[in-house]
Length: 118
Image 1 (cartoon, rainbow, N blue to C red):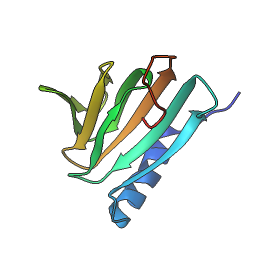
Image 2: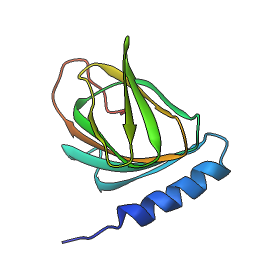
Image 3: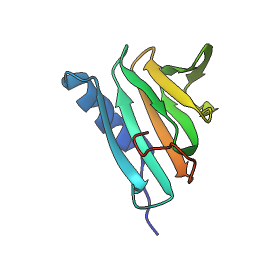
Image 4: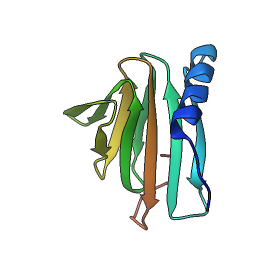
């Protein structure tokens, strides 16, 4: 069994995101490309975007802190601390409306045309 403090990991990534030109910092806390399930903590400086990408399977975003906007085509949803957003099965983009940390959980499927860049 392993135990992680998502709060501490998020705090570290928020500090790093504020200090780098990309405005983001991330690490996988469980799983990885060779597994079906992958969970990644991402810290985002205000205004930073995770550009539109194809969802490689079933995915959720848990907002650990801050406020984000999830966009997919013409649709948009806002998430705040504690909100869980289910990513649409096609493409999506995340924008940090303020300094934010999220936990991205992806369960990869064998969906045709999917890639592992989420």
